[in-house]
Image (tube, rainbow, N blue to C red; front, side):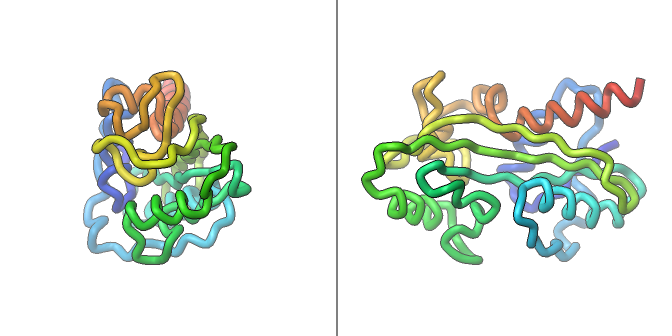
Length: 194
């Protein structure tokens, strides 16, 4: 049994889908909704994912998985980065964050970016391992598509010539940063359990 620890429904769906077919039972940590979330003060995705996994592992005997993820835009020197979810403020909506991102990019011609995800595994207050996944793309000038969440509508994925919000759930799972990080950690767990 592995417990997932995230209050973001979009992330949870993607992490659960990435675990399908792994042979591992993955569920949301019981009582997660009534557990106060930890503060995120790390300067890297690894620090934030690790601190969340360690924190939540204190509430169960089973191993837990937590992630931290975000968007890095080259023209903005890696911003919004670890501040992606709160880019336009503590109560920011996805639309608020996208609007600020597009305003800050303005008419920039270099719009390369990447989604990054780090998944951390911990048990009983100790970090076991982390894995990192990323996917490269470009920032569109206007949102496109109605699927996904976060910055998906403005993240263009050149190999499929669509934004992440225009991909089906299966298409996104096959190429996403979250799927890649999750597959990496599930592979490590599988190798260590043999």
